[in-house]
Image (cartoon, rainbow, N blue to C red):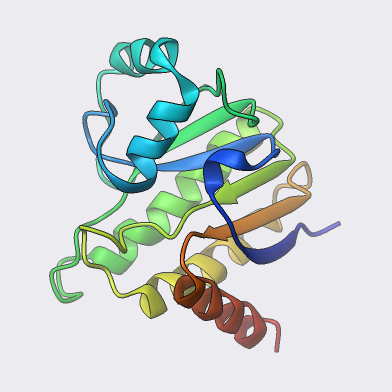
Length: 172
């Protein structure tokens, strides 16, 4: 059975899924946007575990417990900064999604929620992120039968609309 993919307009820190993905910075020690919200919601022990991970490179991912979050796990991944698309940004972004799916598979995670990565201070155009997200996730989850559901969790209505459009386009 291939995983169900869909987009929702919500706060990722409130989702009751097996794992949420944190659009982290390379230190994994918290920041602004969704990263800061996840750190605040998960609590101080979460930060302690993040310190033990020793950071993370762009395009890679690491896993921690969710602590005070409804999600059992948090997959931390560092997305690329947008420089116009000529510095391997699409490849790094696809790697980000692939690594998250690999970690989910390794930990028998059945339900997974992704934020709109690199679209805040990293400046990546949301329409491009949505396209890469949907194509990459569809490509890799088909080989991971344990993953039953993937949610693209969008904080803004405009991000949600773009992810919905990408899902509809890729379903054709």
